[in-house]
Image 1 (cartoon, rainbow, N blue to C red):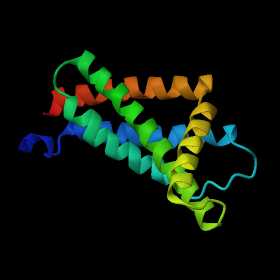
Image 2 (image 1 turned 30 degrees about the horizontal axis):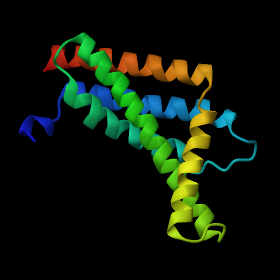
Image 3 (image 1 turned 180 degrees about the vertical axis):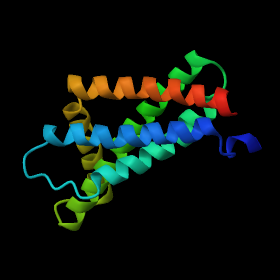
Length: 152
């Protein structure tokens, strides 16, 4: 890995900030889609941290090659954010169920985790949520590319 991959740049900072904000907004749009009475706990905060990491690591390292690549990087970062959010949140719910004694065994836990991720993914098939995620990924990539060119 080249040294420049770990160096902070304005583009990486903007990408991290953009996807962090997108993680919060997406979380807020997801909440009403779930059953009433769902305890979300640290849901928003976890998704913000995932957005920051995906913005820095996924989107940020693909900046500086033009606006088309920057926008593509923003959309890729958004997709990575959705993937990791589904993974982490379903893993967390699987652990909660296992600690309550409703899941026994490693394979049952793994199966339940993938079922939960699929269920959450199907809940995410909401036009407003999808539109906001796509627009957010597009804007994050464009703004991060602009910042990379302007202040690099």
